Image (cartoon, rainbow, N blue to C red):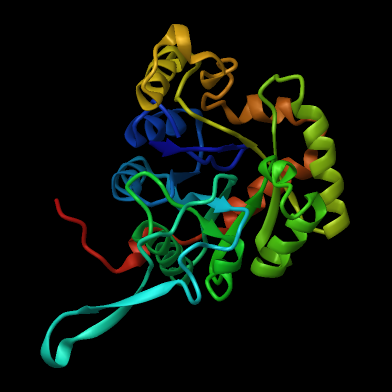
Length: 299
């Protein structure tokens, strides 16, 4: 599944019913110079996304939306074991979680963007750590595990930080600033014509001012055009193994999570020029693409 948040006039972040190629094509038609793809707990779509964006003449920004646990990661510290890998002189040991580890039930999502080669490596290390101790489709990392692995990564602190009660609202943003550095944390605001969004944006703006971090305007894009919303709802039902009649609140609340034009985003956030300017500045800052990986993708 492709995770996307869409940004204002400069770039966009991606999840949903549309393929990377479709989203890139739509972004090019709308005049976007850059686009960012955020997979759920991985970089699975990055090669296809990179190739499509290169063909369209759009800068492809890489990232991921990581599942964060509100507790210290299970299977760490004393609750780990080692496994031998290889043979003879090439034998090494790998630290693995114990078999009885359990994932925490309380989680939230943290979008991160890659700014450098070191950032890509650190993102892959965090994803690998998460996947090696959990069943397929599951897993989470604790904020404590980011220690030493935040170089080259940008954290986007959005509405989920308001619900992460384990640290407290201000305490969680403070924790992110401590881990990533003040210059590598952005507070994101979104508007999908939902009643409760504006109160959240006011709180996020206050937090950004209190911790002196910039704000950006984004749009949680799940499909290329508003007409794709029915397909997205069907795929949501497939994912949750339910039907349209029984899905209830699992379905999208409206059709606003489509790739909007830069002009539409500018109108939506006309009262918050700092957020629009922050989005443009971040897009210009993120220069790393998969072309910097030094790897030749199979044809």
